[in-house]
Each structure stands twice: as structure tokens, then as C-alpha cells.
Length: 418
Image (tube, rainbow, N blue to C red; front, side, top):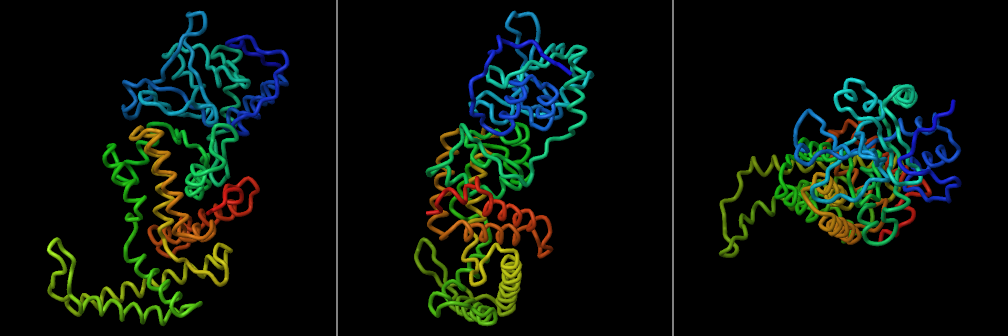
């Protein structure tokens, strides 16, 4: 089968070697160079295809409003499509969404729009034009139907061009790598589009209740200050850390529980609080309330030790190591929150980059290594979501940890933690 769609501009006879941003663009370039259009379409069908949407319609729900362009001769309507590695940096007033190739092939969508062609990665060495008229339409549309939805979850993906690979920005981005691998996102994409503008807005609204810039800034600050997770978790882990430092080595869980009771009863008996006027005496808590609080923290210790035992069995924690803090749970999410806010246009690229760098610096102060950071993140995620089911909330992170610790291209193997 030979398919040669008309190019938007003259195609070079002998393309020079090209460093593609991701394997997707590289595969498109290779297929185009050898004239393998079925292969080109198969690659395209497994990719997310982004397109610009109209700014005045960007926030409309349950509808898509592409921003069409005119062809070079000004006669027909074209739509530019971009694979992830070819997206331009996010700027105010410009918004992108994405769909799989099969979505663009629907006649019910094409005919009313009167679009004659799609231009894939315009101006690049892997550019191609996909006409929407027979017989060409059937060739690329068939590839979309065969492929289904793009699947990247559980993969380590990166930008080879246009993404940070070294330095403070890369280190901060790598703090969010567990979630990037789990979701199949490009871990080092600072110029973040993510799931597209509508998807990023929906993500923040559904999971975080964020619908405004002010809310995004507030949550981002909480995460960077490590104030978004339970203070009780940090109290319990901090007490064990103190015991280990004072007495050296292993801390017996029974002694840890006993120490919790001693410290909490002492604190309850002091019955003071710090106010603007200084240290103020308050009414002591009822014994029943103090007992309930102690019992809750002791149950938490049981949960922590069981998660740590599982992490040791799975190679996340070394045999003689324990989790020192769950601040990684906040800092890893801060690295991602900075980018989610950029994708949702609640913040600028400069703001997101500053937050990412701060997350990396704080992580380097709180932990000794990537494995220590990872264990803290995973424990925090599980305490928040998993309820000791050791289900997907744990298993997805355990697999992401394995990938990041073993694959040669992993940032955790190429970027020093400190």
C-alpha cells in the first residue's frame, strides 16, 4: 500500500538526522522517511493528538470547539494536530485539548465542520497531512479504529528535547516522577499541558476542589510547606525518629506505642497553648478524650509498621530502614500541582518552575536518597487512600518505584538526590 498525502510544504528529498522529542515523534519521522504510511498511521493511532481550542469557548462543558486554520492557499479549513513532544509551551490565552485518532475520523464530526485536512506536527520533520476525503480518509481512520485509546500508564516517559534532564528544575520534576510513571506522563515536561486544558481543570476541580487561581496558590503553598497531610502522622514518625536518634538503631513497636502514651499524657496534662498574649493556661482535656487520642495514634503505629513490612518485602525499604517522614507525600504532589496549575492556566510557567525547584530543595533537606523519598511518598499515599487494602493505591506506586529504581533512563538513576 502506498499513501502519500499532499504536504503542507515541499518535503525534503533526504531528511537530515533529527533528534525527536519522544519515541512517538521518532517513530513518525522514521515511517515518513521510508514512505511507510500504514506504519505512520499505526504510530499516530497510539498517540494523544492535541489541538488548539477556541479561547472564547475553552470553558464550555460537554462540547469541543477546535480552532481551525486556513490552508496555505486560503481555500480550505485545516486543523493542526500535535503529538505530546511537539506541543508549544503554555501561554496565556492559548488552550489545547486532545483526542485519539479515531475521534477525528468520525463523519458526524467532520462533515458539519467542513474540515478538509489535518496537519500533524506542522513544520516538523515528521509532519504529514491527513485528507478527510476518500480514499485517504479510510486509510488513516482504519488505523484509529484498530488501536483504540492511547495507553501510557505504568511507563517511564521523558522529553529528550525540550525537557529538563539535569539541574534544580529536573530534580524538582523528578520528585513527582512516581505519579508521572503511574499515569504515563512525561516526567520532565516543565511546559505542561498534561491532559489538555479541560482535563487539567477537571482534575483540579474533582480531586482538589480547585476552581480559581487563588485556591490553586493556597493548595500549592500548603503542599510546599508540608502542611497538607495529617500532623498526627508526622507526630508519630517524628517520635520514633527521636527515639532512634537518642537510643540508636531499631525502635521496638511496643516501646514506640508506650512512648506515644507517655508523651501525649504529658502534653494533655500541661494544658497550655501559645496565643498572641503568650503561653495561656487552658482547661485540660477530659481523660476519655486523651485516651481516645492515644488509642488512635497507637492504631496508626500498627498501620505504619505493616506498610513498612510490606515495603521491605517488595524491596522499597531496605531491611534495616524505616520511613522517617511523609513530607514526600506533600512535596511530590507539590511538584505535580505546580504543573497541573500551569496546564489549567491558573499560573504561569515561571511560577510553576519556581515551585518545582522549591519542592526539590525541600525534599533534599528532608531525606537522604531517592529510595527514602519514595518510601515516604508511598506511605503517605497509602495512609491517605489505601485503608490497608494493599490495592491499586499501593501496587501502582510499588511498580512505579521499581521502574524508577531500575530503568537506565530513570531520573532517579541519573540525578543526584543531594
